[in-house]
Image (cartoon, rainbow, N blue to C red; front, side):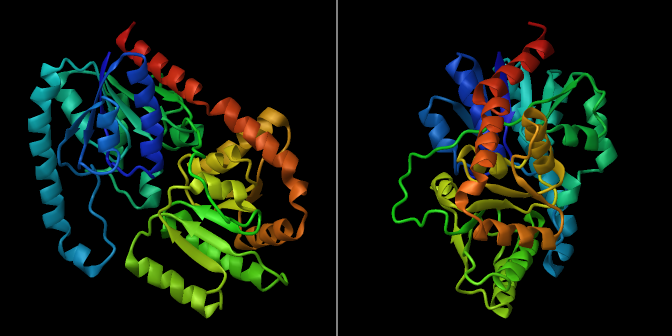
Length: 388
C-alpha cells in the first residue's frame, strides 16, 4: 500500500498529531509506503524525516471559514477566505501530479477541517479516508461551503471515514453508513523525562489548550468555590498552549478577582506532562465538547485519578469503563457545583480511597485503546477499501 496522509498541524502536542503518528509509525515498521503532507516544516517534520518517513511540505489552509474573534477578523474575512481558497487550489495543482506519479492508493486526511486531501482524491480517482476527531461546528469551526456539503462527502464514491468515538459517528449522522468505522485512538504515555522535586499528590492538574472551548473558565469558577470551602486547598496547575494573549489576560483578571494568584499556576507547553499526571492528586477534563478526550485516557494510563465532564468523548470513555468493569472509572460532573464538590472530596479524602478506581481506569485504557488495536483496525479498514 501507498498512503498519503494530510495533516493540518505539525504541533507535536496536538492530540490529532499524536494519534496519527501511532498509525504512521506502525505502517512504516511493517514496510508500507507513506507520504506525509504538512502545511509547514515545523514540529514533527524533522522527527519524521529522521525515521525515514517521506514528508512533503506544501502550504495550505483548512477547509473551514476564517474565525471571527475580533473586529479585524470581520474586516479581513472576505480577503482571508479568498486567499485560503486560492492557496488550497495552488496546493492541489502542485500535489496532484506528485501523488499521481507516486501511485498513491489511499489519501487519508487527519481531521474533518481539511478538504485538500479529499479534493485531490477526486482528481486522482483514489479512495479517501476522513479521520473525524472533532465536533467541529461546536468548537468554532464552520465547514466550507457548509456542513451539509461536508456530510454529503461521506456518501460519495470511494469516500470513507474513521470516527474516533461512536458519539461523533452519530453526531454526523453516519451510524448506519458501511463506509465508516469507529476506531478509538491509540493511547500510550512517555515517562522517559525525569521530573525532580515534584510534590506527590499535592496539586490538581489540567493539560490541553488554554482556550474557552476546553472549559477553562468553568474550571476556574469551580476552583474558586473549592478554595473558599476547604481550609487548605491544593493548588491548580494548568499546562498547554495558550490560545491568545487576550484570553490569558481574561483568565488572569478572574484569578486576581478571586484572590487565587498564589494557587493557580500556568506551566505553558511542557515535555513531561505524563510525569506530572502521575504525581497529581487528580487530572481534570472540563472540556465542553471533547471529540475523544485524549488527556483523560493518558491520565488514566498514568494511574492518575480523573475528574471529567459527563459529555461527548469523555462520557463515552467513562461509559466504556463502566460497561467493561461494572463500576465507574472516573468522577463525572455536569455542573460547576458538582466539579467543585469533587475537588473538595478528593482533596480531603485519603489518596488510597481512589486506588481501585485508578486501577480499573488503567485496565480500561490498556484494553480498549492499545497501539496494536488501533493499528490492526486501521489496517483492516485500508485492506477492505482496497479489496485485499
